[in-house]
Image 1 (cartoon, one colour):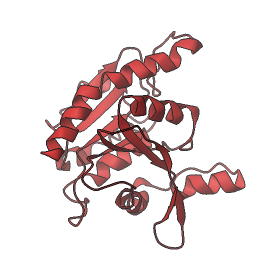
Image 2 (tube, one colour):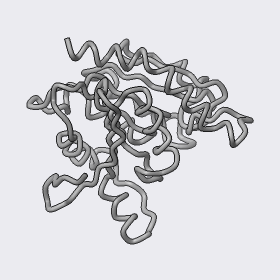
Image 3 (spheres, one colour):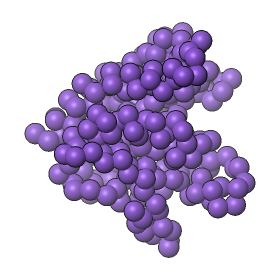
Length: 229
């Protein structure tokens, strides 16, 4: 389906919808791959089989790349936040259905930045939680430039699913950080930024990703139930 979010921009939503969903998961793509990449398709399908209505849309820079074929880097995170806010405000579905924000890499970072006491619009119901799949704790090769300052201002719980050998935040670095109680981590042993463990055969990639997502279900359902009460 498509919706208008202002400035004459039409946003197209990919939807994976089960019968009687637990809630809605708004899944945002990363910096370099579109909303319907193979990885994103698999994540959406896996979450849908677990009972979640998964909705995906693309930020304008990525949608433009789809139109003209030119690869371009994303704008700075602070410049993208207004667009992300507009997308989240226009998510299809009834408001009484719990809403969880999620994203891959940059998408998870943007969702977590939006879900803070400072930036979340007072006129909107808070999400139940944020799920970050491969959080970019720092830019590649620049571990001194941490992207965690906003964690202390989170208005909802944040779950980070992280590979222990992620080049943007591996176990050695992240386990040395002091994170607030609102942030919990689930480690994928020897996983990279796509949560793929070292040495995993190609035919095993999706089944392992599915297993990783199934492990998040108790946390996701608990957050959705807490918002419904």
